[in-house]
Image (cartoon, rainbow, N blue to C red):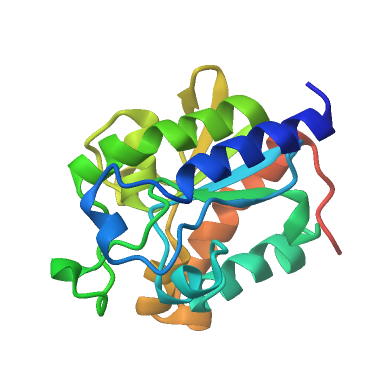
Length: 203
């Protein structure tokens, strides 16, 4: 599939996502957050769901967690953010009691309703590696109930695509941020991905 046709296929899905009312999250969103990046990306990052800034902008990972992820991609991996693809399991912001104040992980029914869109994204992009960020995306992609603490740093598989689970950037921020030992753990996981792809790290 050519890059142009991949873009067109993704745009078709994005237009389906925009008016989606498959689950209750549609009742509180400002807008859907489909995903963004290179349709031919070697690496696809998958998080759990949009936060406040993502809901306002329509773009994934643009808040504080997104800033950390961008630094990991651009400074750590040494590639532009738009050379990878970034998406979430759910395309609408999950909040506690649907009050649109405090974020929460997506619930099972929300994942069931929304995940077919993500599966179609993966099918079109066909990344060489998937990096799951946090518990919800890791459990969905790897079909497991194990937690991220046990799974991170260990390769999994999604229909022949290698999967590297690691901590969600927001979890790193909540546990020390730039000075958190978890940041080193995430970087060790990313290095395994770079080694597998035989990418040369900067410096």
